[in-house]
Length: 596
Image (cartoon, one colour):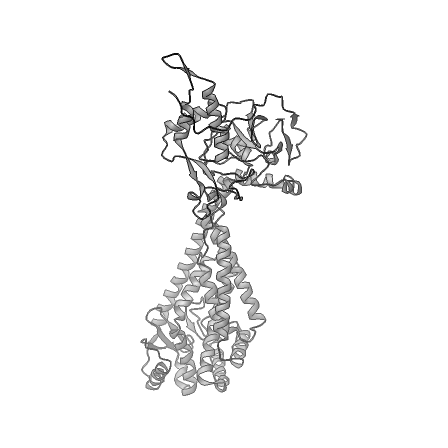
């Protein structure tokens, strides 16, 4: 529901911008030639209700992110399994949401904004439902009300008219149909009451042409102009266009420009029909044609019922023209009429521009969902792992402000070193027994030089005795770990990559059972690798701590915090390493056979 309401608001904004440009064109470049805008309005109305956006995948939709170097993976690169929230190789100096410089320039504004988004996600959903119900009610009421008026007016016109049998008018109508190549059948009726209404076309499927008794005294030329105007409406299916205009503006009933657009479309429709009259009979006939319109205006100024004043008819005055101003506009359009392809070129260019804006805006809005608000709190990889481990969250769970506020103390310390990386562990609220998620994908050097190396040394340091009393290595953990993970070429995972130089990574077998996953947790937990992450520098980015409003104390052992200025209410302790850091582990020896 939220996505629908958001897309509707975006479409309404595009509708307003397009209409604003169209109104500006009418008042400037096309002043005196407003009838050219009719096809442009049709394009605007079509685009205003079509969601032409393209769903743009967010970065979180990618299964794996990596950085390629000439040798495969550099020391700073990481292979990330975003779907589980586990980042086994994430560096402590990388924040995916808020950089250090951003923190310095914006202060706490971004933190507060993101917290507010995450806090009110439930309210946003409820508001979306209420707005949808309000919009649907307004659109349905407006559209149905207009259709009811149309039905009542059609009945009124039918009851106050009779079939026209005048041979002269029927002959002229037949000649015009042949000249205009109109094959549709046209019913001709004449109003019984004088000055009941101006000539008009009524009917979406089976059109009926209504004229009034004053037409009987017109000259053939005048009658031809009046009938050509009405037949132009029928040939272009303007009745269906007006119905569509009513529908589109009903969809945007809450938009202040909708009513003005409806009136303007009806006016430009009449002006464009005047163009066709001038095109058929020449500019010399424009004076006579305009005189005929003025005679109608004078005759109907006091008596015309204007039963279609809401825009559901196609007639000389059915759109309720605004007096002398509209008459001047009609005369100016006839006088300034120019043939050619200007109308088609302008409509095509404007429609193309509107489509481009529509696609761009809706594509951008497609990335904004309720999940965007629910996951507004963006932590650096290290702190994201920490909270998900502490609260036992999976990839579908949001980190809420309440969870962040529940953290009062944090201790981060260097535990072990290997190659150019350091293994860091944390303690939250004085509870060091935290189980982090299992990594689904891990970098080759991370797995072999840390996980497998730790499991191997654990087996070497815990020998068993065979039946002859000889000590043998207990490498069951090592063997099981390798059985559950597969050493895989990363190019087989990243579908869009064609390179052969990406190196390899360890991928957890997707068919692993819950029991096997529990075994893996036990294996890594036994060697102390489940409550830690790795970094490449002692400078540790702590900018994400800006979300932790209830934090009372934080301790760093062997690390230097950067990227955040702690408030006075937080006790910060920075200590050097206590000297108990475990030395680097030995690389795994794959050629060694394990004895049982």
